[in-house]
Length: 111
Image 1 (cartoon, rainbow, N blue to C red):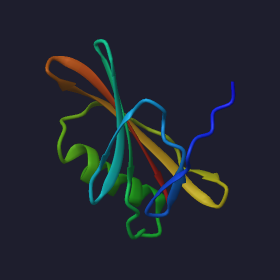
Image 2 (image 1 turned 45 degrees about the horizontal axis):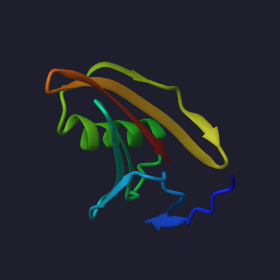
Image 3 (image 1 turned 90 degrees about the horizontal axis):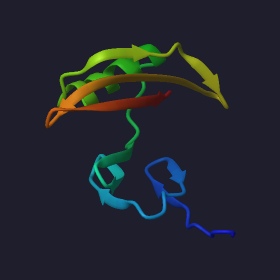
Image 4 (image 1 turned 30 degrees about the horizontal axis):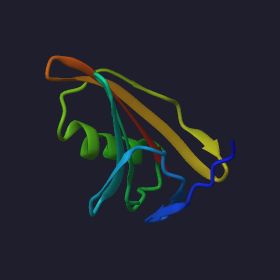
């Protein structure tokens, strides 16, 4: 069965939103969330920011401003910078607690 999905845009990003997820738009980001029984998931696209010219510095600043600002993260991990279609890409992840449950966060920075 073919599904025709409408492309959406936020800042410099165009994407097809996940079907059946709840959308929440804020000034700095747009997010989509879904609750399935006891499981919960969220995807967010953040507004672009000025690059420092270093993917490592940009990824560290994003991690601090977006994730560490509001969560105490354990088990942090990060990838090595990679090139993809003209972009430098780097991801960071970690685990934090919410109501006694582990929550995993993955943040990918494109510079």
